[in-house]
Length: 278
Image (cartoon, rainbow, N blue to C red):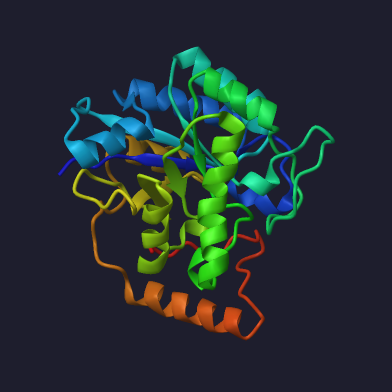
């Protein structure tokens, strides 16, 4: 079973807002990590290529890897795109659609704290330069705690907004916070998305569910030794694997709190703990 590292990044900057700082990688570190990927013999492929292999048996290179970025932070334009272009590497960028800045410089109302985000014009240009654009909900909620009507709005509405802005269909989705359950995954399928990423800090494989693609979160404190292990296909589990009991318990607790009107936020970063591939 081939272990495929799918790397998850958020912001790439020297000066992040405090809430996302633990999940931020400095530009110099990011460039070094890309160099380590290439030097380690990894061939970076698109998410679309990986999903084609999972679904239809498309051929993969011997040592594939995938680069993904969540939310749509503005630093992707200045810090990420030039480094990808320098090495001719593909990537997938998952957009929280209501967070996209308008021509007036403001985004819509989301559950994300304030941060500088991409504009629609930049997103369209990124796509023209080879970046795959995917969806990450409208407002970044914990999808598995939502009632049916709002769940549909977050998942179907996100796809409509992206397709209206880009002028064509979109297929790749990523669950906010990595959270999903069977109901959420079915809604993603019904909306027409053909893949969806979780977290779990694990390698994925061709045997994994394309609606539960596990990723390795690159954090501010991810050391070069850990990153080297991941490049080498070591240091983490490989999906598919059963859901852990603590993951199930955490989901029921969050749902209960949401129904009581006091949803769980999570650690100081504002991003709930990512326990497993939900």
